[in-house]
Length: 204
Image (tube, rainbow, N blue to C red; front, top):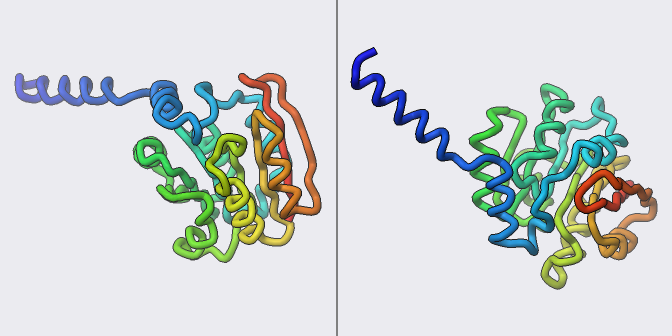
């Protein structure tokens, strides 16, 4: 290899090593805006398995994820999703959105740097009439006043018949918002997570 080629390869290696890893990105996101991230530690594999358990992957044509962060749950969803399905990841954090676009080279993934309250418009902009499943780990108990109810209302309006809003939280506050829009809500709990998580499955 020529000196020029070696230098170029070394430069690429250095550039790659300087890109923040997922844990660093997640911690930065939490410190930058803890109100929107909720936890400094990504979800555990136990929580991921339990929150995704009710999903019928054969009918999951349009899957939406609120607050994907660095893709801790995005990847397991993509691993299970049909080849012709769509996963729309919605996050207000531009750094997380850029990270997802670089880390996941998957044509099924659409990253929207917008508010979850705009779900109806986001779906329409991407040629979707509705969502089969929506998953959220957004910290509803710390969101600005009015934002939580607006997100839940937009989700209920956007879910197809038989769809499910999958929510994992560290506070039960979201239950009040869900009960205002959904008639059928199942509950769950996952202790093997830091912190332990409360699970809500709201059926359209």
